[in-house]
Image 1 (tube, rainbow, N blue to C red):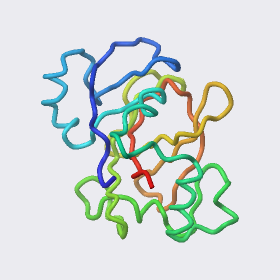
Image 2: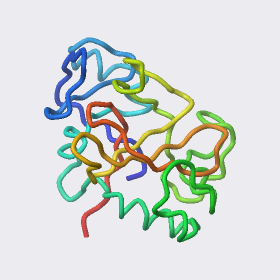
Image 3: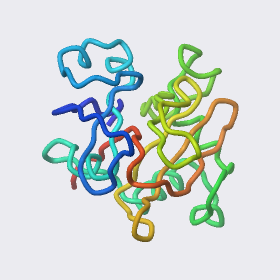
Image 4: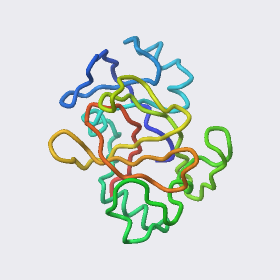
Length: 185
Protein backbone atom coordinates (compact mmCIF):
# COMPACT_ATOMS: atom_id res chain seq x y z
CA UNK A 1 0.00 0.00 0.00
CA UNK A 2 1.46 3.34 -1.01
CA UNK A 3 -0.13 5.38 1.79
CA UNK A 4 -1.01 5.11 5.45
CA UNK A 5 -4.30 3.38 6.09
CA UNK A 6 -7.13 5.85 6.74
CA UNK A 7 -9.93 3.47 7.78
CA UNK A 8 -11.77 5.07 10.69
CA UNK A 9 -15.01 3.35 11.76
CA UNK A 10 -15.21 4.84 15.26
CA UNK A 11 -13.30 7.03 17.72
CA UNK A 12 -13.15 6.17 21.40
CA UNK A 13 -11.67 8.21 24.20
CA UNK A 14 -9.51 5.91 26.31
CA UNK A 15 -7.40 7.48 29.07
CA UNK A 16 -5.17 4.39 29.34
CA UNK A 17 -5.56 2.88 25.87
CA UNK A 18 -6.49 -0.75 25.41
CA UNK A 19 -4.47 -3.80 24.50
CA UNK A 20 -7.56 -5.99 24.05
CA UNK A 21 -10.20 -3.87 22.24
CA UNK A 22 -9.76 -2.06 18.91
CA UNK A 23 -9.04 1.68 19.32
CA UNK A 24 -8.66 4.23 16.50
CA UNK A 25 -7.12 7.73 16.65
CA UNK A 26 -6.59 10.80 14.50
CA UNK A 27 -3.41 12.58 15.51
CA UNK A 28 -4.16 15.50 17.80
CA UNK A 29 -7.93 14.96 17.89
CA UNK A 30 -9.41 13.96 21.24
CA UNK A 31 -13.09 13.94 20.32
CA UNK A 32 -15.39 11.21 19.05
CA UNK A 33 -17.17 12.94 16.14
CA UNK A 34 -16.19 11.07 12.95
CA UNK A 35 -17.24 13.97 10.69
CA UNK A 36 -14.84 16.30 12.49
CA UNK A 37 -12.05 13.70 12.50
CA UNK A 38 -12.45 12.97 8.77
CA UNK A 39 -12.16 16.72 8.04
CA UNK A 40 -8.84 17.10 9.86
CA UNK A 41 -5.85 17.89 7.62
CA UNK A 42 -3.70 15.51 9.67
CA UNK A 43 -6.12 12.65 8.95
CA UNK A 44 -6.08 13.45 5.24
CA UNK A 45 -2.26 13.56 5.17
CA UNK A 46 -1.25 10.83 7.63
CA UNK A 47 -4.27 8.54 7.90
CA UNK A 48 -5.43 7.11 11.20
CA UNK A 49 -3.50 5.62 14.11
CA UNK A 50 -4.45 2.19 15.44
CA UNK A 51 -3.77 0.17 18.52
CA UNK A 52 -2.62 -3.36 17.68
CA UNK A 53 -6.08 -4.94 17.91
CA UNK A 54 -7.49 -2.34 15.50
CA UNK A 55 -4.49 -2.71 13.18
CA UNK A 56 -5.07 -6.46 12.93
CA UNK A 57 -8.68 -6.06 11.70
CA UNK A 58 -8.58 -2.82 9.66
CA UNK A 59 -6.97 -3.75 6.34
CA UNK A 60 -9.55 -4.01 3.53
CA UNK A 61 -10.58 -7.34 2.06
CA UNK A 62 -7.76 -8.84 0.00
CA UNK A 63 -5.10 -7.10 2.12
CA UNK A 64 -3.48 -7.85 5.49
CA UNK A 65 -1.25 -6.36 8.16
CA UNK A 66 2.32 -7.48 7.34
CA UNK A 67 4.04 -9.88 9.69
CA UNK A 68 7.49 -9.24 11.13
CA UNK A 69 8.75 -11.77 8.57
CA UNK A 70 7.14 -9.88 5.68
CA UNK A 71 8.83 -6.67 6.85
CA UNK A 72 12.14 -8.57 6.82
CA UNK A 73 11.54 -9.74 3.24
CA UNK A 74 11.10 -6.10 2.19
CA UNK A 75 14.16 -5.00 4.17
CA UNK A 76 16.33 -7.69 2.60
CA UNK A 77 15.05 -6.83 -0.88
CA UNK A 78 16.04 -3.20 -0.28
CA UNK A 79 19.59 -4.15 0.71
CA UNK A 80 19.63 -4.86 4.43
CA UNK A 81 22.32 -7.39 5.33
CA UNK A 82 21.18 -10.81 6.57
CA UNK A 83 23.07 -10.28 9.84
CA UNK A 84 20.87 -7.28 10.66
CA UNK A 85 17.44 -8.66 9.76
CA UNK A 86 16.72 -10.24 13.15
CA UNK A 87 18.37 -7.42 15.08
CA UNK A 88 16.59 -4.82 17.14
CA UNK A 89 17.07 -1.08 17.27
CA UNK A 90 18.63 0.77 14.32
CA UNK A 91 19.69 -1.40 11.42
CA UNK A 92 21.51 0.76 8.90
CA UNK A 93 22.62 -1.44 5.99
CA UNK A 94 20.95 -0.62 2.71
CA UNK A 95 19.61 2.70 4.07
CA UNK A 96 16.22 0.97 4.05
CA UNK A 97 14.52 3.76 6.00
CA UNK A 98 15.43 6.41 3.45
CA UNK A 99 14.26 4.16 0.63
CA UNK A 100 10.80 3.96 2.22
CA UNK A 101 10.32 7.62 3.19
CA UNK A 102 8.42 10.01 0.95
CA UNK A 103 10.78 11.71 -1.50
CA UNK A 104 11.56 15.39 -1.17
CA UNK A 105 11.40 17.69 1.80
CA UNK A 106 7.67 18.22 2.36
CA UNK A 107 7.63 15.87 5.36
CA UNK A 108 11.19 14.52 5.76
CA UNK A 109 14.63 16.04 5.27
CA UNK A 110 15.41 14.82 1.75
CA UNK A 111 15.36 11.00 1.73
CA UNK A 112 15.83 9.21 -1.57
CA UNK A 113 12.72 7.06 -1.90
CA UNK A 114 13.12 4.32 -4.46
CA UNK A 115 10.13 2.15 -3.61
CA UNK A 116 6.95 4.19 -4.06
CA UNK A 117 5.92 3.36 -0.48
CA UNK A 118 6.16 7.03 0.59
CA UNK A 119 6.23 6.53 4.37
CA UNK A 120 5.16 9.69 6.18
CA UNK A 121 6.15 10.82 9.70
CA UNK A 122 2.68 10.45 11.22
CA UNK A 123 3.88 10.12 14.82
CA UNK A 124 2.06 7.96 17.35
CA UNK A 125 -0.27 7.86 20.35
CA UNK A 126 1.93 6.70 23.23
CA UNK A 127 0.88 5.05 26.46
CA UNK A 128 3.95 3.18 27.66
CA UNK A 129 6.98 5.42 27.19
CA UNK A 130 6.69 7.45 30.38
CA UNK A 131 4.36 9.77 28.48
CA UNK A 132 0.72 9.56 27.49
CA UNK A 133 -0.33 11.45 24.39
CA UNK A 134 0.42 12.17 20.77
CA UNK A 135 4.10 12.49 19.88
CA UNK A 136 6.65 12.64 17.03
CA UNK A 137 4.42 14.09 14.28
CA UNK A 138 6.75 15.24 11.51
CA UNK A 139 9.72 13.44 13.01
CA UNK A 140 8.95 9.73 13.01
CA UNK A 141 6.85 7.02 11.40
CA UNK A 142 5.76 3.95 13.40
CA UNK A 143 4.20 0.91 11.71
CA UNK A 144 2.66 -2.21 13.25
CA UNK A 145 3.43 -5.76 12.25
CA UNK A 146 0.96 -8.61 12.78
CA UNK A 147 3.50 -10.48 14.90
CA UNK A 148 3.00 -10.52 18.67
CA UNK A 149 5.87 -10.05 21.09
CA UNK A 150 5.26 -11.91 24.33
CA UNK A 151 1.81 -11.30 25.86
CA UNK A 152 1.44 -7.51 25.73
CA UNK A 153 3.58 -6.33 22.83
CA UNK A 154 3.96 -6.56 19.06
CA UNK A 155 6.85 -6.03 16.64
CA UNK A 156 6.96 -2.65 14.91
CA UNK A 157 9.05 -0.71 12.41
CA UNK A 158 10.19 2.82 13.10
CA UNK A 159 11.64 5.48 10.77
CA UNK A 160 12.97 8.83 11.95
CA UNK A 161 14.23 12.08 10.47
CA UNK A 162 17.99 12.08 10.21
CA UNK A 163 18.32 8.28 10.33
CA UNK A 164 18.73 6.39 7.05
CA UNK A 165 18.03 2.95 8.55
CA UNK A 166 15.01 1.20 9.97
CA UNK A 167 14.47 0.41 13.62
CA UNK A 168 12.88 -2.91 14.61
CA UNK A 169 11.59 -3.34 18.14
CA UNK A 170 8.35 -3.93 20.02
CA UNK A 171 5.82 -1.66 21.67
CA UNK A 172 2.81 -2.22 23.88
CA UNK A 173 -0.36 -3.15 22.01
CA UNK A 174 -2.25 -0.17 23.43
CA UNK A 175 -0.14 2.39 21.54
CA UNK A 176 -1.54 4.02 18.39
CA UNK A 177 0.60 3.55 15.27
CA UNK A 178 0.20 3.83 11.50
CA UNK A 179 -0.68 0.85 9.33
CA UNK A 180 0.47 -0.21 5.89
CA UNK A 181 -1.34 -3.18 4.42
CA UNK A 182 0.08 -5.87 2.11
CA UNK A 183 -1.91 -7.39 -0.75
CA UNK A 184 -2.84 -11.04 -0.19
CA UNK A 185 -1.27 -13.52 -2.58
